[in-house]
Image 1: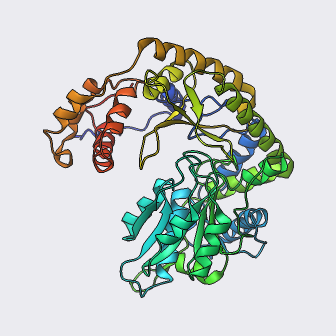
Image 2: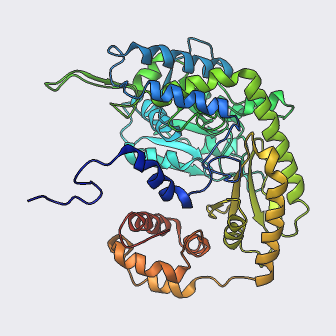
Length: 483
């Protein structure tokens, strides 16, 4: 008698069958190349770069980063990658750093290091701008550190140094600035924030995950880029993702420290069990070396000249986008972006941003919805990369058409009936089947997220979190099909 296992064939299948099945599964995915997906993906537009990264990734596929004494290639590659990032961002070839799987892991480790450097503080806190990345809130929950979010300037969307300083207490273990903030693409006043932190004896982390490997090249292309890196006095750590504007495959970030004692505080070691001594520089223990090798290969193939050209192209695209948006009635750019990240908002009550996102997606361009929070307006996010210069005119045409279509329909009523219905449930107890049954009432469907985003935006933040987690659970359940 044999037992059936869903998803696992009774007998192995021919390998040549699998690519077609994968293509069918990814048929509804957003495009990862060409610049039409203005979030999540970063495309250098150069096949040779992609091919070099793939070859390097596969060459290191079986190498385990758990033990660098067993695989010394890990040490050699990481030294080269960390050194390249450090020398570009205010450090030198000897600057201590860690190669991580992404910005969230880099931020988690930066918060852990700051917390563990002050073991005498029983209830540690970190002070962040309200525009800080969600990864800091994740780090707070995982590491039991209170996150104190400080309101930013409502006109510029930048952190206010005096307000950040006022939020520091005897429990503060870390002060944070963004370079730039993801939501609006603006760089916080790092020099002032770091100086005040240093005056209080506090470390200052700069979240340059999205912009760290972009801003220096924008400066070379003529953009006015505020100081933000390790050359700024008082900055003690900095995170920079290479799988963003470094154009490496996913799983590549670097966390830099000003000194080695703080890097040591990010490490984990355990020789208190009967197995092998575990010493980890990251949250992961076993980890593939593919992303590290691919990041190294990408840096080598592009070189400074390649990044310089990609930075120039992204900056040109951003300037053209901003100028074009100024000609579209109802739309406006929020703040003055320092990077190639742009947030679009509206003062027109008849222009529903959530419908605009869906309409633009239907025309081949994905814009990322951003909810209103802490007095900051809702917006649509765009990240422009090196290939965006070729498609920015098409993006503007799609925006104009989408604005006209949404404006013609007029204002969309708030989801009062659905909110009243949800009020009858305890969201923490809502099961996947019940939520899946409710979602059609919010207008959820293939490539249609306006109703869900409108509902989330109407809820208070704590209920948003609960509903979003329930939505994710339902999405992975058999009760909800997207395609």
